Image (tube, rainbow, N blue to C red; front, side, top):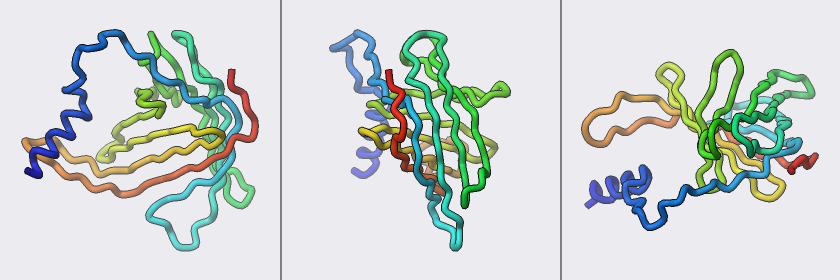
Length: 177
C-alpha cells in the first residue's frame, strides 16, 4: 500500500492526471517581486558561532513581455561588510511559462511559476539544488535545498538532503507596476 501512495503522489506531481477538461493554457500568477527587500539568511544545519548574514535584494517588476529581462541583484553582508554580490536577471522568453534566471557568463537556469511560487532546479557536479521563492504581502521567502544527487534506477531512489538555506526578507521599497 505504501508503494501505491508513493506512485500516486509521483503521478500527481508530474501531472499524469492533468486531464483535458480545460485545454486553455494557464497564465501563471506573477509574484509581486519589484522592489528592494532586506532581511536575513539562515543555513540549516546551523553552524556554531556563524555570523549573521544580512541580505538585500533589488528586483525589477516581474517581466510581462516576451524577451524581457529585469535586474535581480542580491547583496550578502556580515557585520556591515559586503561578502558577495550576485548580479542576475530574471527573463521571460516566449510566453509566461518560458522563464530563466540569467546568472551571466552564459549560465541560464530554467525557472517555473507554479502556484505563484518561482521554482528552479539544477545540478552542479554531484549536487542537486532546488530553489523556491514566494512573496506573501511584503515578505519574500526563498529556500534553497542542497541534495546529494543519485543516478536514477528502477523503483524508488532515496537521496539525502544536505542543507537548507532560508532567506526571509521584507520589502523596504515598492517598485511594482
